[in-house]
Length: 302
View 1: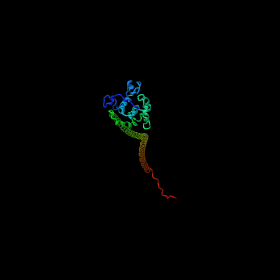
View 2: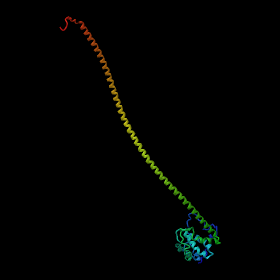
View 3: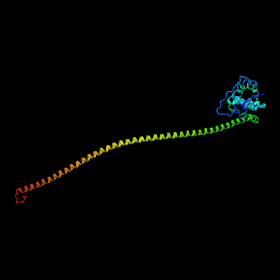
View 4: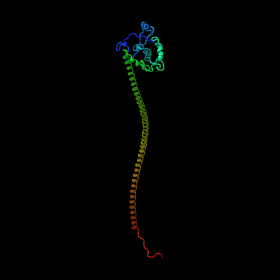
């Protein structure tokens, strides 16, 4: 197949400030490319004025056409690289689904891509492409980029190197994030285990505290009961003491009555002694006053 040479573009001069090929930036928003004029389209024999070229396709089309314009193999590879770049920019789009859209710009695209769609170059989707140059296409593109004496070769090499460095950096960051995630998960699991142990210990401590509190309440009730019993026992002891004091008073009264009785007995004994003496004296007086009887001289018994 033959591919018409594209018109001159600022992208062909390296380092040009108006070049649309620049280092990729974060969160780049794909631009909407303008329609190709009828004169250019008719001169290039690619499509009619109704075809609108995507900004991503146009961005890859001009530099690839520049370094591929000197060989038939490169010209055949150009449509495939362009469509692969479009698939890479719009992840999840298969190569076969883009053939119909790219065919108006490259009438022989189906023929040129039939060999590339073999087992050596699998279907290209966003899951295994890397920012415009896919893994299956990289071995085919890089040697041609290095061997092409085009002014845009350095731009393409720089872009590929930058993309490879970005991929390596992203892989390193991904590995670091995975390691950090693993560490955080381990720390989280350790914290969960520590929290479970702390909760279990707290539950045991609360159970022991409740048991001790119940025991303290039981001891307090027992102490109050003993205090009540001690108060009643004190009252009983005080009543017994009062009874003892009453008995002592009774004993003292008995002793006093006994002393009085003894005094009366002694007085009676003294009075009895005086009366006995008086009786004896009276008997003696009677004996003295009574005349003596005459004594008979006759013997008794005759």
